Length: 551
Image (cartoon, rainbow, N blue to C red; front, side, top):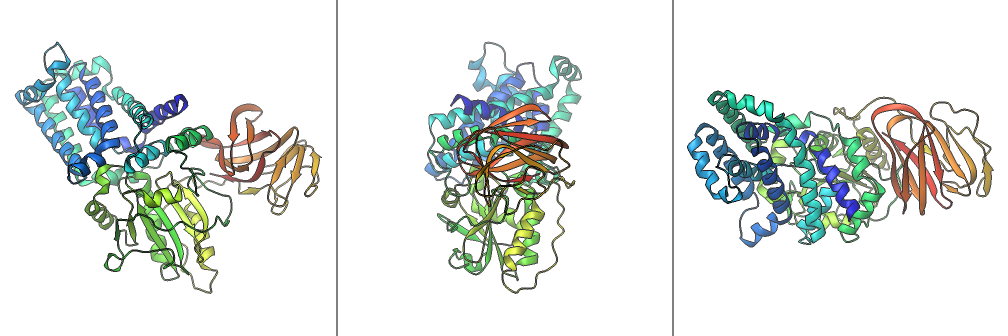
């Protein structure tokens, strides 16, 4: 549990530097600059308290009281307008702060308005969610909140809120603001009101969707590690079954067959289907189906939508059916009219399944927004991708599955991809059947043999050393098993199997050790910039390797 709390805290800090912080940043600046030194701390306290409580309990509470799920969000936006007014009318601020005077022996002016502001922000703050927040949201949505879930949410909220204190710039800046008196207060009031109006109208989303996920590599390294996977599986009650418990990037390095896809389960409402009629995978047999888990306020999901919409236009007549499974993060996302309005505003015309009770999410064992599962004409899952990016790869697999019948396909789509497009090392398979760019000792098929590294490796080449059994689709480590690869990329992923450890070295320097506890994709390297390096892997006996992918 201690490990998970540490992961949640760091994940919260990283969240505070993502594009998702942009809507609340000017409001925090306006609110904190207009008060005393203690007010920023009151804002953070209010944000942490409301985010923790309402992330876990808002849906349950509103259901119990038979109130609409977006009521609290509307109240919070209204409070932001009221607090903006208090900057112009100090007497109004004093009236609002009186109920909080018991928190301090000092005069009013710091804690009350700050706490209210923070509490309001906690209801409109929509983080760029990773697996930590996804696990907590799943438990809240299925009414399985535990003490551990409360602790993880609280620590995550603290991590996300602490960096906000930095925007105040310290005592000198605050003193400078106060010295300018009414002019600064009026300017801050306008800034806060404009920020609240932008959130009300969803204008902030258009700005965020234009910004790339510049913290993706850090989030992947923190929340996509094997340690995080293990701890989150415990938090969810071991719910890492099916396909979604694999990784937050590519599930596999090739178009494979992962068995029959789970059907749509627990869907309360269908949008964009004739008469609102439900869909089923049995009814879609003979079609290629792309299941996309998303929410309408998830910025990562919104940046993926242009590609999904382009594929829907290009391939619907050829037999592609895209189903957007809308599984909500927050209470206001449970409201069907909100989802319907967002779908209309965003131009989503393919079917949308409202998964408010997490039935389909749980059936897939999913952990991510967005997540795409590609299903062939016979109803089998053939590929999955978690997070943004790799759009060309996904589209090529869609075309491959559609081409199993003699259909005429439109030209490939040209939706703009904001992910890095530089030349990187191609997929590299390790079994002898598809082994390419290999520069080591001669391969001895299907038996254990001793290998030696060459004196040097050219770009994108790999080699083995030590005892290995090289099979058609994988290699199995023996004593002193090592692998070297000269790669060009930011991310290096490797499909591994068995149980044991893999130690990584970059240009001869130890980097990280990956614990292998099942057959899935593991993240070996996650860097802020693309580069060329020599990767060396040292395996414990029994660990199997299948294929590298890069990003």
